Amino acid sequence: MAERKICVVTGTRAEYGLLYWLMKEIEDDPALTLRLVVTGAHLSSQFGDTWKVIEDDGFAIGAKVDIEVGDDSPVGVSRSMGLGVTGMAEAFDDLKPDIVVMLGDRYEILAAAEAAMIARIPIAHIHGGEVTEGAMDDAMRHAITKLASLHFVAAEPYGRRVVQLGEDPDRVFNVGAPGIDNIVKLDLMPLPELERDLGLDLADGFFLITFHPATLGDGDPGAEAGEMLTALDEFPGHRVIVTGVNADPGHNRIAGLVSDYAARHQERVSVHASLGQMRYLSALKHAAAVIGNSSSGIIEAPALGVPTVNIGDRQKGRLRAASIIDCGGDAKAITAAIVRALDPEFRNGLGDMALPYGEGGASQKIKDRLKEADLSLLARKPFYDVVVERAAS
Image (cartoon, rainbow, N blue to C red; front, side, top):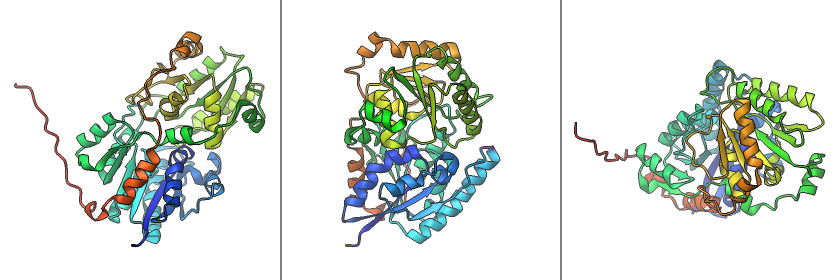
């Protein structure tokens, strides 16, 4: 029996971190062959040239699809999507995968899904069915669901939503969040080692900040980021580690604000385009709180028992653990949320909280399903009708 060629598409450092253990599972299985397509921010020096991290981890890159992510205007992003569709079509034609795996909801992933669908290559989608009302990713995620044939969701309510979108329940699998695998499998760095690696003194406590554009928000994309930075001034005793903003529309404005803030507070603020998965999760483990609007604060931080100050509506709609403190985008609300996150009574109550995204093992479950799936049955997608009972008029 010929080896099954499984193509994995990755466009960002964060998404690669979530896919890492699945890629290892595929690569270590003699019945499977990994084909890797790298695109998006991975190929941009502005975002840290993180394709080099992938190669340093020992993975061979089968194709690089440059979509020129520097222009974050609507026209620029649309142009990048067009380049993505064309480039992905060429990559898939060259690599000839049996199935393509993609995670999440970004525009470059939608472009990859469109190209795979046109080429009649089955798509396996991870993290479908979720809702993020403050980002255009929400619509893209559901669009990818409709292009995909296999669905690996992170929680049962998300699986129901995928079925509600017309997908066959027999093709929807609740495996939990792959990001939890990193926490379970990685030997995270002790605080002294992290301090040496970053060249920072973190013993007095620090915040880990990740803030991305809320692409469906009104007004200046940097307004909430500016309010967050103002709130941080209320906690001068805490150092601040900021990870790079993603490539969504509005990222240049936020990156500029963060850079200016760091220049004014060099004694306690450090900015990193990419920490890498090991350093990021190690910092997450030791942080006094995670602050911003990233999904890592919703999914990974609770698994480590770290409080999250979740700002604004970007993650609105996602399942939440008790460690997550939602707040508005003004400095006063953010300050109050940080105060609560630091409250010993609040922190002590998190020891036995429920974790909605599972406790690990997603990567192996996904690999096993990819290996066992009858791909000949995935060429056509029946629409699964959900019976809706309507109230009498």
